[in-house]
Amino acid sequence: MPSQSMTPAVRRAAIIAFLALTAVLPPLFAQVSAAKRIRKPSMDDTIRANVYADNTFQLWVNGTLVAVDSIPFIPHNVISVDLLPAYPMTIAVLAKDNFDPQTGMEYANTNIGDAGFVLKFSDGTVTDGRWKARCFSRGPVGGGTANPRIEDEPLPEDWFAVAFDDSSWERATEYTEEDVGPKQPFYDADFAGATFIWSDDLKLDNVVAFRTVVESPPDGKAREDFTGLNDVVPEQPARGPGGGKGRQQGKGKQR
Image (tube, rainbow, N blue to C red; front, side, top):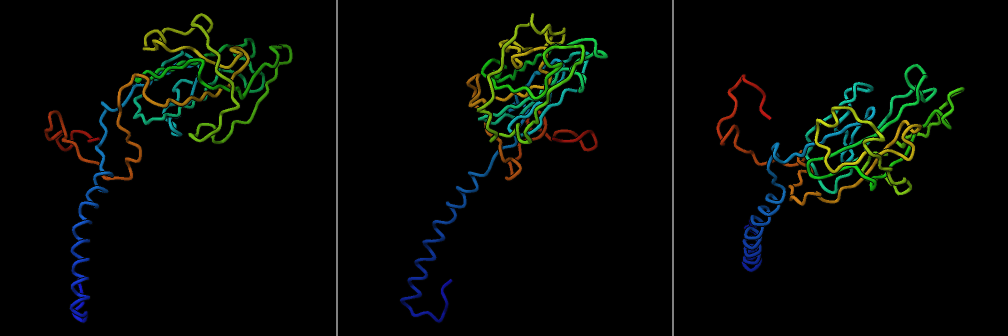
């Protein structure tokens, strides 16, 4: 507030300026507060990811590791996880065929294996030949089994990051179900519209990284962006079915 030592003219000017400021600031603060407010996401905001790899994979979305194959070899399995999407969505996958790290073969160095990878998100995202792919370990080199050996290329530390430059990577090669020979779990899950992909050598390339960017939901459904949720105070939804009190204390953990 204006000081008592001010002259009347200066005091009047200070009072006018103060009143003008108090009229402007509350709406301004309200706009900033509203801009930062965000509701808590629910499971209705998530999408389902189905992933099948021959033999194993790790999946990153927007630079965060979100899924790891729980079975590194056999039996072949499908991993299904719920994701909270944000677009543009950068997807990165490290897929591996089963192989001996010295020879590139499997089953006690008696067989050259084959590979394959397929993915589908419930927003319509699928694997196809538009994905980028790069091999980082191959063998046995040249397919020779008399003295089998492998060739490795270092995997860049940030290969899964959103800002990683994959412009030098080749397009993934598409393969048919007959080429890959998926097991029953593949047919039990929803992979409609998705295509098996790998590098250009399904048998000798044992470690392949994939990347793609999904600019917007392929199904056209508008989805709220919850990026930065941990940096704001979200609106609290009503707990429990129909806005009730939710679980009773001691009956389980609230999300």
